[in-house]
Amino acid sequence: MGTLIVFEGIDGSGKSTQFDMLCTRLGYDAHEFLRIRFPRYDHPSSALVHMYLGGEFGSGPDCVNAYAASTFFTVDRIASYLQDWKEYYDQGGLILTDRYTTSNAIHQGAKLPPGKREAFFRWLYTYEFQLIGLPEPDHVLYMDIDATDAAERLERRQHETGTSGDIHETDISFLELCAHTGRQAADYYGWHKIPCFDGDRARGEFEIHGEILKFLQL
Image (cartoon, rainbow, N blue to C red; front, side, top):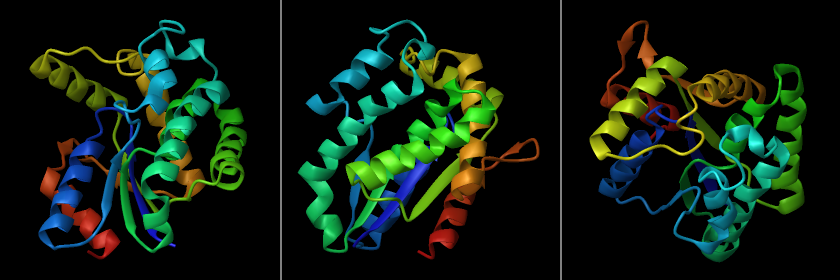
C-alpha cells in the first residue's frame, strides 16, 4: 500500500498554501507523487457538493444535516479514488491531498453539539474507510488557527480576488464552530496539529513549512 498525507484545517487556515509548498518541494527533489484537491469541482461527481455549497438546498450550513451532507463529499472522493489513484496507491505511491474525509469531521461535525461529535467521528471513519473502502490517511496535518484570525484572512482574500465565499465561508459563527470542532477532531483522531500563531505572532509560511518537513522527515 501507498502513503496518504492530508492537509486539513478550517477555511482561512493556510492549508492550501502549505499543501502547494510541499508539492513544490517534492517536485524539486524529484519525488514521485500525486496531488489531489477535494472537492473536485470540475468533475461530475461533485454535483451535489456544488448544489449544497451554492445554497440550492438552503442558505445556511444547517439546511442539510451532518450525515446527509457528508455523503455528498464521499461520492466525489470514492469516484476520484476508483478513477484516478487506486492503482497508484496500491502499488505503493505517495498521495498528497488538500482536504479529505477529515474535512467532513470538521465542517459537518460542527453542526452537532459537542457531546454528539465523537459518535459522528466514529461513524465517519467507519463509513468511508471500512464500508466504502477509501484508504485511511497515514498523516493528517491540521493547521490550527482561531476563527477570528481565519475570518480576517478570508475577508482579505475575497477582497483581493473580488469573490464571495460559499455558505461555509460566509457564516462566521459556523467558522467558529468549525475551529472548535477541528481541535476536537484532531485530539480524537490523533492528527498532528500545527499552530498558525505563536502567541499573537502569525507564523511565517516558511517557518510552518519547515515544521512540516521535519515532521514528515523530508
